[in-house]
Length: 263
Length: 326
Ligand SMILES: Cc1cc2nc3c(=O)[nH]c(=O)nc-3n(C[C@H](O)[C@H](O)[C@H](O)COP(=O)(O)OP(=O)(O)OC[C@H]3O[C@@H](n4cnc5c(N)ncnc54)[C@H](O)[C@@H]3O)c2cc1C
Ligand SMILES: Nc1ncnc2c1ncn2[C@@H]1O[C@H](COP(=O)(O)O)[C@@H](O)[C@H]1O
Image (cartoon, rainbow over all chains, first blue to last red; front, side):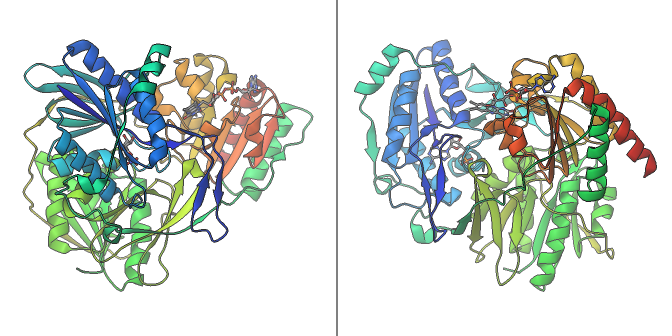
């Protein structure tokens, strides 16, 4: 069985991000990690392999060269092979285009199960999973918290829905987006890290992949980034005076009512 | 293609959610700016009253009432939405960035090759097209995006992004009978509803959030009482979830839910960046912490430096008084 994981390398929460003076570009401090939710996807792939044995795990990122590092991390965790589809000078702001490229890779490489994160920590879009599934014409389940590959080419999945949980049976091939709670991602062992250092990570040009799902050129992008700006800061905090907790609370509630007008 | 604006209405317990009324309010402004019509789209089963309720916002309301739409599925809802969008060709489709919205809209966007912007928080409707405001990197950066409007554009917004305007004149309701196509590869085995009857965390106007400083699961009862009193919800920091004091669905922060209530009160939590990224867009932030140097005070509008267990009973009493006054 072939399990394919789509992994995005994202800026670490602590990374400094500088907006250029013309507000047209961002400079991200060189602190990158595997997207939080994609760690669940890699871990789940490894667990599928541990359970079913005859499984090959492929990880793929459509990203600039720097993402090789994050791909190595997934190998160190236990993935078998990794591919970087080079996004240098390519459109990456339009999720349709990113999804077409990834779907093109999946179609070429083959798969039974595709795993993604619930969403990327940088754009929080949650677009790529369902879009890739649509292009490939396969079913998807979002926000999966439990996944078991049953016999007969089916999977039983538990997923988060509005105000509850759903258990469903899905025929493979299928795509799942991974939610927190699915598993506890492992920390790579030193042997894994050493294997990852030696593993060859193939870099592909998107032009070398046949992509029958629509255009991927920059001119085909439907999204233009106009500008970036810093969020408006808050004025500094007002600490409530008072000799007792009661008095502080009275002052707070008065301020919330008369000044902030939120009560 | 038309220049019409569509709002896909999301219902909970057969009633339109507050987030949908927000979208109808901003959608009405957009449509008037584009000299076009605002359409509300109501999909589901037994939603005649819901359609009635939104009809006072929209020029036209499209209702697809079909027993096969009783439970949401991307396949069934997607097939209906696809045929409606193909028939009416709106310029802009507005939806909620909810669990359902995140599942449905990208799938439909890919099917229609429609431009898609997700998880936005604002819009600028001056000029010809639409400019969308979307936070990146947990709110460290705000981006302004312009989707191409030569074909349909789908935009989803976080709840609490817009004010709800007053209802207007009641518009026409059109009953459509679109075919519902389920995907044979998908079968629901069971559904578990946590019918709390409470307002959704992301939609709540009032959130009181507890952290490790709350010390134990039982102590959250105090927060729940205040939340109930205010018609809001209790949230929690990740430490609390990891300690199993509360369920994951209550987690606020980068790896939990993103919320923007009118009033957020943080109790006994430090204000770690991962947490701040999930609540920084709240209108007013109050922090209660015994440590005057807790980072949360850098992000709060008002602060009380004291023991949370001494503050909460007084807070409950004072809030109760203001409730009784109004
Ligand atoms: C990848 C990643 C994702 C994460 N995602 C999230 C997320 O989504 N949400 C989230 O919340 N965190 C998240 N975290 C964790 C985050 O970094 C912090 O560890 C967490 O938010 C701290 O929780 P806390 O404030 O409850 O606890 P602490 O940091 O321990 O703070 C407790 C506070 O309570 C105060 N206190 C103690 N007793 C009292 C008292 N009696 N009265 C008043 N004050 C008192 C203390 O002064 C202290 O400031 C994430 C971390 C990582 C690495
Ligand atoms: N450029 C990319 N390369 C590989 N996987 C991606 C990429 N962008 C998004 N994904 C996957 O899609 C998920 C959702 O991303 P997003 O739609 O950006 O929120 C991520 O968690 C990844 O699993």
